[in-house]
Image (cartoon, rainbow, N blue to C red; front, top):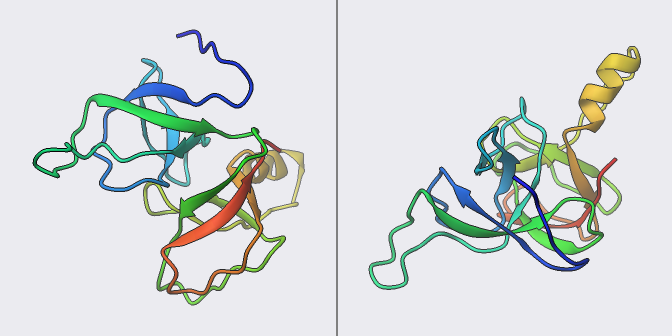
Length: 145
């Protein structure tokens, strides 16, 4: 798959997951499709839209979704883990969480260069507005460390 776009344009790809909301963190699959990322995946971008059918309201899989790629420098609302007991403050790094498609506060392991790299490659961005533990979304400046 070749991704062609101008700076500031969204990327479009087929998602293998049904997305009931915007803001999910997505990974790029080997076949060129996208799906919700987990803590084992390298994030590709943020779902700009859901995949809900406009007529019946059900989220559909295997349809095209608009994506804001990481590294754009855009600030977007990203789905975050709730009920973890962790509030997010401006300047905190967020990374792909253990729940598919959502972020949580990044844990950067500096034990050696390899673990540092593994920690940094899962980072989605920097928090720009505080979010409490119960907030469903957090405003994040998308970066590519």
